[in-house]
Amino acid sequence: MRFLSEQIVFQEIPKEISLAFEITNCPRRCKGCHTPELQQDIGRLLTQYRFDIVCEKYASADGKFLFSCVLFLGGEQHPEFISFLKLCKTYRLKTALYTGASEISVDVLNLLDYVKLGEYVHELGGLNSPTTNQLFLELI
Image (cartoon, rainbow, N blue to C red; front, side, top):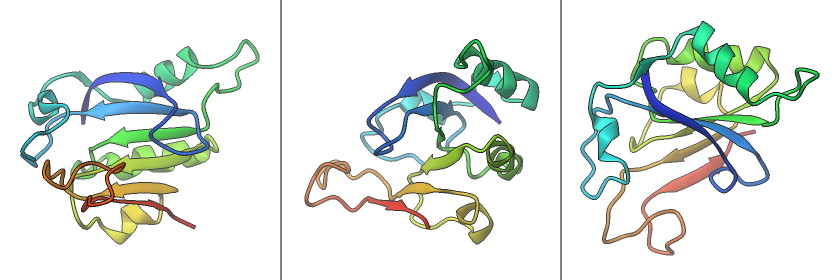
């Protein structure tokens, strides 16, 4: 599993400061994709070691994370995806997934706190549009 970039984001998950990873090699080809570069098999390999380094980059001097949630922008198709969700849980972090899929496995859902489902359809708009086909859920 590879990622193009990581960044701290404030708007994607309500009430959370999220560390977002842009996962590449997306199998979907949504027309009007926000980030078409993510369709390519490019970027750095996401390993547990690299994940830890990125998390430490966004930690205070006493080691506490400056974020409360890890947001994966894609990635659920990769076999190692579940292991990263489990790793987040061991760090007591919330987990979120943005995907263009309309369905995801129960194994993945059970490890998520938030999920955005649905292919982007330009005519229907994104999550902020009243006509969107996309769905954002807080999982309990």
